[in-house]
Image (tube, rainbow, N blue to C red; front, side, top):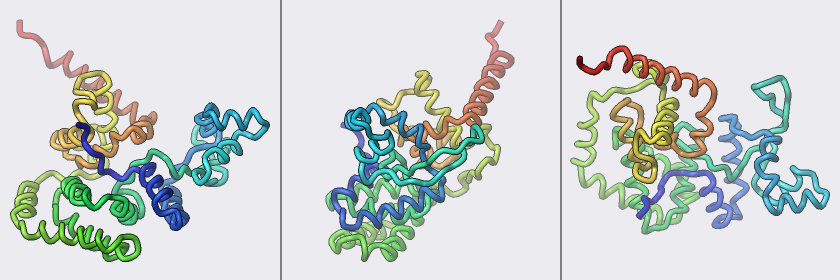
Length: 292
């Protein structure tokens, strides 16, 4: 049986808000737009048209005389929001940019309003699944488990009354109380991490940064040097390479998401991973020689 997914995927979250809480969908969209504005996460219009022009409904409307972007907006209402004209990095040209509210985007702790989107995730989770979801986040949020409990308490204080139902709040508070009745759970977890290496961005302790490490894992999978994702899921790969590199297991897991891998495969990261692989080959040629 496939492992249940408990991450915060924007596409899934938007669908849940659109169909389950449509009266408040506009407010939800504003939060997504703020997050994307801060992150500068958008898609240029020409790329958007190239991606969606062959969709059946879009194609039908274009053949009927509608402009491609109008056909896309008509086929996918409440999905794209214009971000004005933005300069392309590859040249001096400008193109219209759009935010995709239904993007296959993994929301992480590094994103603005993470606590808010986490609360949306809570309210879309069935009561019978809340314990499992919280257990999953407890394992992946931080090396120090009390950090997640504190985050959870503050998030409930900030958003709980407005976004969550009384039975959801009661269930979450029961989970916290049960956790706190098991002091060894938190104590042992923190003891295990005492003295563990804390990585800083681009600290050069390893030759690849966190994003480049995720891209390298993807290459190892696709070239069958390690197990592919059918046999080694992102969570397991994140834990394994966290031990090997000191990077956060949860962040590695999130970076292995398909949409994140596409984003990470830029020229800088590809060049750095290529250089690391070439250095490895040179080391094998120079230092790893058969006896005799």
